[in-house]
Structures are given as structure tokens and as C-alpha cells.
Image (cartoon, rainbow, N blue to C red; front, top):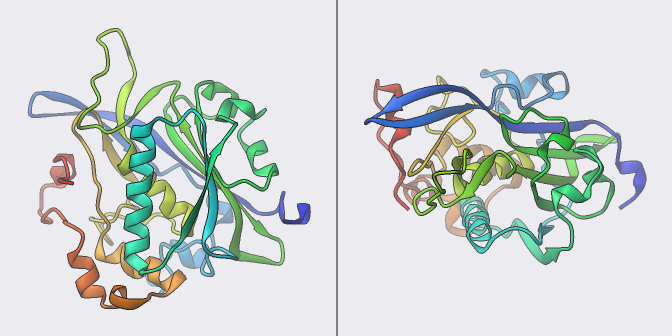
Amino acid sequence: MSNSLFKFPMMICSTVVMFLNFACGAQMYQASLEEDHDKTKVPDYAKNPDSQYYGVHATEGWHNLPIPFKTGFALTADQKDGLNECIGMWESAVGKKLFKYLGPDDKTGDSFDDLYSSLSDTTNGHYLDTDWDKTGKSNMVLATTIWDTSSRNVDQIFTADIRFNTQHYIIGDSFSLLPSANDPREVVDMTTLCLHELGHMLGLTHVSKNYDRLSIMNPTIYIGEGLANRNLSCGDIKRIQQIYGCAGEACDQEATCAKFEQPSASDDDDYEADPASE
């Protein structure tokens, strides 16, 4: 990959905790993703609900498939399981192989000088950052997806990384994690988080809850023990197929939607707080 492909329009997506709610006597936090884009670099059509490409920031997706990637050596088995589950869901949505695992990387997020320097190599990596302050992002940011496009075609992605904030959060299976009483970090469900972040990595951007309230690309998620959203909406499936097309049974969008369990939409905005079944 030529160095000329780097340092061109760069995008960033990150999850930020914004405020506190209470439900069923348990403390939970709602994480807002509203600030995770440099909105000046998002195409106007991606922000316009009347556009056929609303929610799609890279209409041509990746320049080559499958996307080769590595995982930083510090990722736990639990975190890798969550990542694999997310990959399986996105691939099931299009009926195609989207990712190719190249094995562990000898780096972590802490190996890089700052947030963006991890894009300077040819590795598409998933990294844990225990020194999150070095990224320059707020400690309220749960994870950040960054990617580069070519100056010749901003609708195509050439490289990307996902960085996870493990300095300030415990990231794993929210249904089984048991943090110690002395650990001040909040639990974040890995599958929920990476399902959203992989959406960005694949070319999707946020859609409003008013437009598609079941979308994994909504700009809010809940975090805490036993809280997760491990589903794609029918809208998510339609939008990812706009980018990558479909193959086989996935082309039956109605049947593909039925593969993913969805909570029933209601007038109660707190339906998201219910743990999603696996």
C-alpha cells in the first residue's frame, strides 16, 4: 500500500459516556456517540435522512475484500470471541466473507505515539490502550475507529484501526464479567461495542433513533453489567448491502432480518436497557 494513500481525509469514530440513568435499581450509563465524527468530513448525503445513502460514509466500502486484520497481542480470549461474533454478524448480513484474520500483532495501542500513528503501517489492527491519555481523547471515550481514504477516491477505505479504551473501562462479555469491588472502571460489552465500531470500519455512519431506532449504528448505547445490544436492524442490513451487495440467502433481506433477534419497538425509549439475548 503506497504511503500516498495515507494522510488524506481521515475519519474518526468514538464512543463517549455522557450521562447517568437508573433502571431496576441498578446503575447504568448511557454512552453517546454524537461526537465521534469529524462531521466536516462526512459527505452531506450520509447526514441527510432523505438521501438513499443516509448512514453510509463510504459508498464503495473497502478497496479490496476480504479486509486483512490483526489483533493486538493483549486482547483476551473473551474479547476475541466478541470480535469474532461481530464479524460473523456483519458477514451474515451480506452473505460474503468481509474479513481475513492474519493472526496476532506484537503491538498494543500503547505501542503508538498517538492515536493516528497506528495508521502509518499497513496493518488493520484492533488494539487495547491502557494508556488512553496518549491518544488525546477524553477518558469518557470507550473506543475509537479511525480510517484513511485515498485523495483520489474518498468513497473508498484503504486502512483502518480500532482502539479500545481499557484504561478507563473493562471491556468483555457484560453478562459474565465480575469486576472487583476496588476497580472503578465500568463494564462495556465487547460485542455491542465492536459491532458498532466495525460498522464504521466497513463504511457506515450514524443514523438517528427517529429514523431507525433498532440500528446498532444509533448514536447511543448502554453500558454496565448485563447490558448489551448484539443485533443488527433491518436498516443496518439494507445499508451494508448498499455498500457490499449480497450473495446467496442474504439477498432475501426479509429472511436475513429474521436471523437477528430484535427487541420490540415501543414508546418507551428505555427498551434498549434490556439485555439482548445471545
